[in-house]
Length: 72
Image 1 (tube, one colour):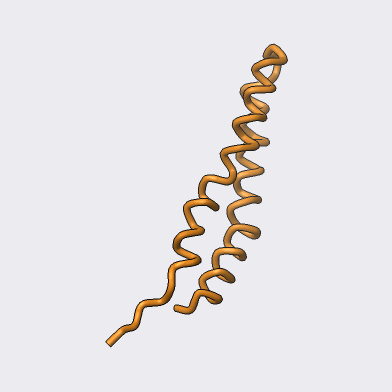
Image 2 (cartoon, rainbow, N blue to C red):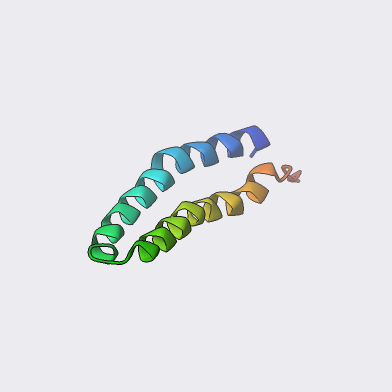
């Protein structure tokens, strides 16, 4: 598979699958954790949630940019 094709596949999956699913998960989770919680718990929650969405994207970068291997 060419590098360009892998980049397209990863971009579509990230934008249309990963980000909406993650956003809905975090939105649902915040309703369970944050009601009545002190301000610093909310700050920590949103700091972690705002940082953790990038982990799967960072893991897909080496796959996207790996050069195709010649098959014999």
